[in-house]
Image (cartoon, rainbow, N blue to C red; front, side, top):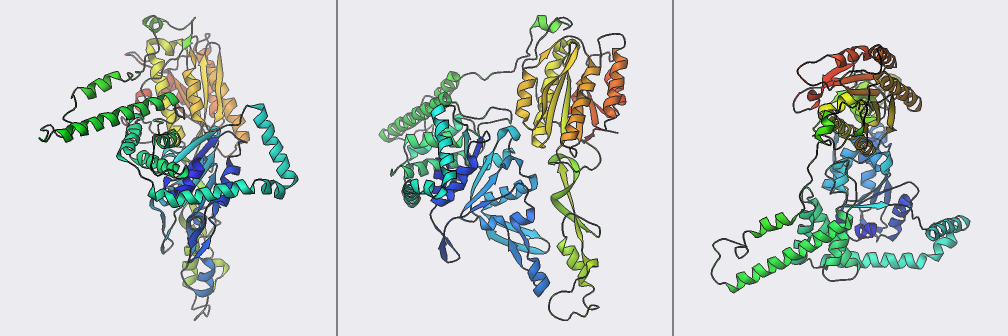
Length: 626
């Protein structure tokens, strides 16, 4: 339905399809273009196109670049359009859109917002229209989507494979029938496809004539306000979607059922205030919002009727006939907002944690974390944390050495000064091998951020761990935004536990963190050795991804007389892997032992106090290693 509604009204802004692997996301999207009406292009009618944007595409291929053939053959500056131009008046499909490189995301956002592509590069200034339906598919287990791009999708749908045996049997049967004879299989559904295409075409013609009354517009605004969505894009998309749905069912005006359907498709991905909030829309919450919208509409109608009956202007202005206490009464009827708890009783605060354990409870206050950056230049997966050499980033200069692709302008400039000596008067430029220049590209990489969290009894005392978990959630949010992989090791009792193996799904990390148990001794040596094992194992799987170990501890290693010695020795073994490291000192109180700083020395990494992790409190960049 989301795809059909976008076909009826392309102004909705496209569809994001989220779901587990093997649920035919790509199959359904690719089938859409066969149902779309023809479009006018360059004075002729043609079918709408489906243009696929590969995750590994270069920026030149997406937005276009200089036409090298014409430059070399005719000496003319000419522009060669890219994929965004091909997608004009059609569908732009991005599979695994959550893995799209950041610089391509920025280009895509600009084009989707303006409906045009502007290119200002390599001495070329060019602009062309690029109005398309943006469709993306993704598996949330492989990482979430940047919030800026998520909001650009008009509608979002979550899909999952049916657990009904009969349905699964039918899926397999149809797939096998298709493989035996694709033409016969397609012919079996040709009439249904044609009927669907006719309905889309008819709805597309009728959509501009569908009436959106003030009553339904008020309902739309009320529902969006109830869900506390940011900005006005949700209201606009909901209105367009409701109008398209009314046209699809053959109605002349938008009704409540259209608004409800539109809300189910428009709001789930916009109600997330945080990347760690669960996606989706609670039906009961939507029911309450729709009911509240009805009440608001009736109250507004009553107020208008009262105003019409009273010839004298109301000195209190519009709505003066309403009881001024009503807004307060409405607010008082709403469920109180849940406030974070300390996650421990007074007795638990007094507990030293040596012989008992408890859950960590709600994380403490979160903040915008300052950048923890690995020094040097890597060449890992694209991200937003540390500097890297890149084959797909922005070209910053040309080089006579081998670069990432041809630097066209640098090559032409190098050849320009030799044209007279080479006897060129007219015609194409004359190039020599010495003219060739490579491009030097710079970008940012994502790293493996491995958290070693001290969850021992000494940390649990005085609710210190509440502040620590709040800091870890803040750092996880930062890792989400910087496209890192994350892993979490907890240290408590007699051993260290890998509670989360390396993953790109940081929301899973937050869930595991909130379920973490605390108490007992502090086997820091085991924590560093477990972290070392994770770093080495991940290096085999992904050799180019550099690791950053973030240890949050007060440094008090317990578990025997030689516990401190073993912790320092294990820290040195972790440092020998070459992983960058930073110790976040969680020690509080007037008397400080300074043990965390000593561990930082043995880890050959950086040191920062817990209070200094906030970007608001301390400016600058913390480099993870000396």
